[in-house]
Length: 338
Image 1 (cartoon, rainbow, N blue to C red):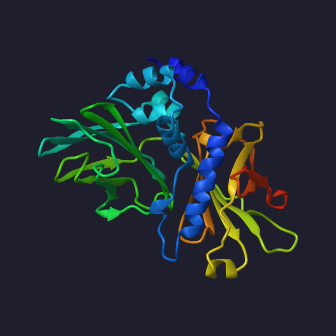
Image 2: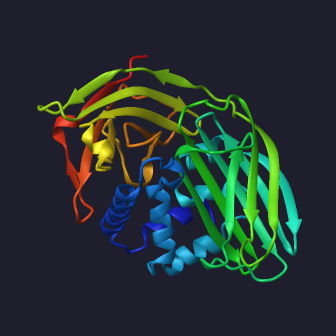
Image 3: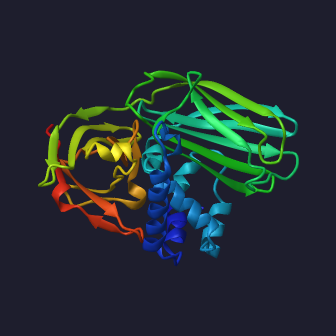
């Protein structure tokens, strides 16, 4: 099935999208409020991935959707079918590197199919094939994770998605927006680790080198700031980075110091609008945290060939029902002077 037919199938699914997004955001907020001092961003939840999992596992899947999923090719950027913010760019410019490296243990083969890295984001696609049926139940899914240069990744945004292609084949996609752009340099060593996976006992590991994909990187340092009238809250756009896999906005947020102490610091929901009125939210915007307590937030938008003249960043609180309440005082215009 081609991309146009797949998108048409998704568009025809009759689901209460606003309610689903609201539910995901409310759940994220509750998770954030429970996280303690010393937490890492490993638990940062990607709204897009969460919503995708909701769509695939909540009873809303239509016949058209099922047909679309059954025709996803095993080779190629399968995450493109799951609304990755860079999916169009990946397909258009053929950005991925074919890896095709595997490890087989006790009847299960883990194969890293392809990967792509641009200094700010890393995406890895993995295929699992078994001699017997693979299980995605919570009790048997096991443990898997990715390391870079032998170290655990501590990203601003991260997600892992797993989908069964058939009873003996599972596709897995990992994606990371790193806490700091280019913190690992131009060449990295990536390892995919697995332990007791999908009903099989054992340990698996595939390690491979990966170079930064070719592409233009443009950076802007707008240093614009806005604050509430009482000066308790302030929002500053520190840096905007345009790269092959994302448009990244680094924000600094100030709030009363006691909110750090009692773990009530704000996790704002954001919408971004460019100078042509294009809106980036829902599946077109990922939000994460670099470091602790939400002082350094990272927004990831789709990559852009044409750089806008400006962005408008619109923060909002999420109420108890999971709906947005915009904070007009903190609305920030970010100029992008070429």
